[in-house]
Image: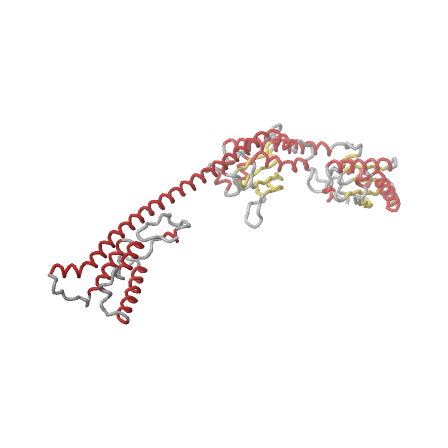
Length: 485
């Protein structure tokens, strides 16, 4: 779109139409193209008059050819260029071309004859030029109004899009709130287990449901060190969050020793967090007051951080701490049991019996051997399939044992079983292993018939004094370490 002279740009700076609507360059208020057109016209006209005419500058020709540039420039560009064309036309007509007065002409008639054409050119240039300028001003006003209308339309469109986005967000929040109770219930069920491993798996879902964090981590207390066991959303290349905190760090002292919840919005807490996250809280059992670890939120949406969020985080930490503490209590109690739920000996009891039989065998002169049964590929099985697999192995083991044989579950959710053969040498244990393998394969459900199960037979040696079982559960060598292999 070309812009006529005298029209201000109707487009704001930086808009798409700025390049096309920019004001043209001018020399002393005149467009260069108008000057070029004048030079070309008068160059051609005077050349034709010199070579083909009488050299009188077309004097006496009606209408005079010099009307052409005057009218064209006034109508096309406006008053300034029209007046310039009239002046140039007057100079081209009368400079060096002043005819003498006739016999029947007086002074005034002679002056009128000389100035008639220049005066008419000036009047026409001003008249048509001003009409053109008024048209250009009206067009400029229309363009300015159009630009303002476009800006208003864009503002309305932006407001509409923003309102639509807010409406959609509100609809999403309302829909989410309708499902909050059900979702929270489902997430709570994920940690409502007695097995510590299943509780650990459900913690991530619970944190995501309650807090909706972008990055978070779970730390468990191991003696005087907080060790990271779960981290979600961390970028190993860009994030440099600590994976452990010892008892000397301010974060450990505040969260574990003083049992305080930290929030980055508080100046003192921000200094203690030191860029490690936005929220941090201890995992405290509401039943016993035991501190088992820490949950830390490294990244959270700006709109998701509020007073309610901090209070929800406090409740979440207590919830998780209670579930973990109960799972640990159950594990400790399970280690003291003689029988498991499958009527097999517990791993702690069978471990002590294995050590006793090994020591007795060394004194009495007989061997004690053990067979370990380990299914593989359990991560690809569902919870129900794993339970069916464990039940099938337990049934096969119990049906194949002799009166003097002992069978146990290692307490790894069906991941490992063991059989102790008292007074059975290694060669005889190999025969029992083949019998056990046949019984286990026969007891497996059809859906699990292709699963790989490993059988390992070894001799149980008496424990050495340096290899005595650790008095703390979960540390050092367990009671089955002497024979599990």
